[in-house]
Image 1 (cartoon, helix red, strand yellow):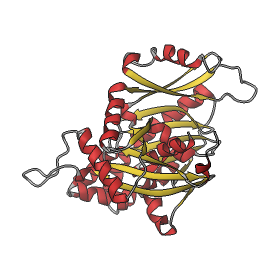
Image 2 (cartoon, rainbow, N blue to C red):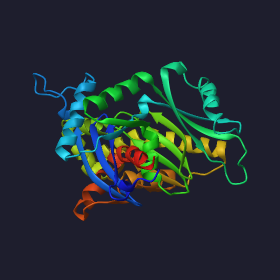
Image 3 (tube, rainbow, N blue to C red):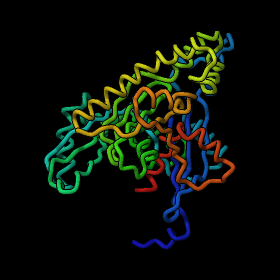
Image 4 (tube, rainbow, N blue to C red):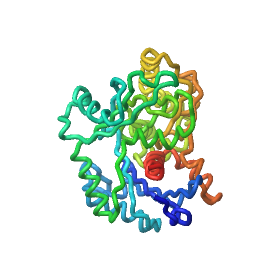
Length: 355
């Protein structure tokens, strides 16, 4: 039905990414073919925790949904975000992703086939998870070939937690989406190349393979950027907060070679995993990875892009999730620096605008 109000009022959506190191919120809008970054906000996780008797922060206990909801509400109020519709990004560690094929069938038959096949891949009972999936288009000329499915399963318990958080924060839950899908939407855009997208997080990392804009596979690993901060802390004899600042400022360009060599040793297992995933994709799909993308807060680590390019013999990029948005020019440098950390929040919000 034609809605005249759509001609005068842009559609707005809020994206929320609850990470291990911070909670990030973005408000974006679409008016016709243009996208605008309306507002954004972030609160670091270390500010959530009270100091112990010895003056140190402790984060051994998980935060309650009520506490996180209040933190989100605080960001919304501080950033003056009025939009109520929200989409949450679910961490890869809380989701299960897999891909498989089903015979060609009508759109009406697909859900039943996916639920039937899902039980073969998911360890939890199907009754205890919520499923989401995407059908990966076949090449032209193979329209009736087997259909490729990318499946995401989220425990119902986690879905209920996100619903509760939205309600407490005074938001209207539009959807929840796996982080890997949101990041892919935010960064791949119109690229038709075969890309390996590496999301380096504070607690874990994810390696995603994207072919012509569609997520084909996603693998999570234990590697995390916290390891890098701890080794800098140990090597230089400084606390973790200072080590984090030194790592972010100097990274693999640090003047002390013993620190750099140790960082290389920590990064090399991740490089081995990336090479393994890319080789497995080449064997299975007969397609070479053409480019490497880095995202997550560690993507901006000085020297990291160059080290990955040298080691993997590929072009390596740190894409900017804000590159296609309208925003005040004064924010250009700030947004470029923070973009890798906000790719999940931006990606899920974009999904709401496209729906």
